[in-house]
Image 1 (cartoon, rainbow, N blue to C red):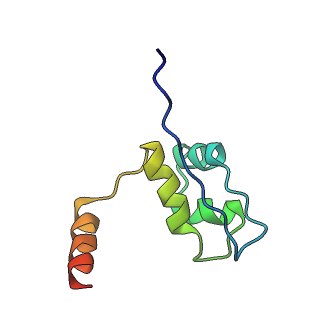
Image 2 (cartoon, rainbow, N blue to C red; image 1 turned 90 degrees about the vertical axis):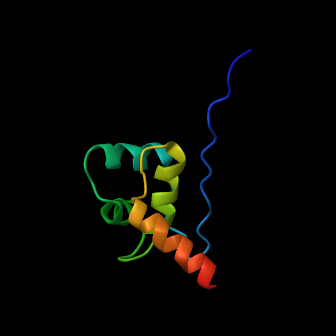
Length: 81
């Protein structure tokens, strides 16, 4: 029996209609050395938008890893809320 490949979910952007979230394009740009902010711009997001969505796709693909400092900060923010 074949093992299923990991499903990468891509949400729809209701605010930005021109954005086409292409998983293969995101991964290719990240592997070529582009930072997440520039990848979001290349997808069609305006400046300072879409970075979290792009980063989430990379995390689901297993390519992008958050640093321990960011994980700790996220846990502290969750406990404070």
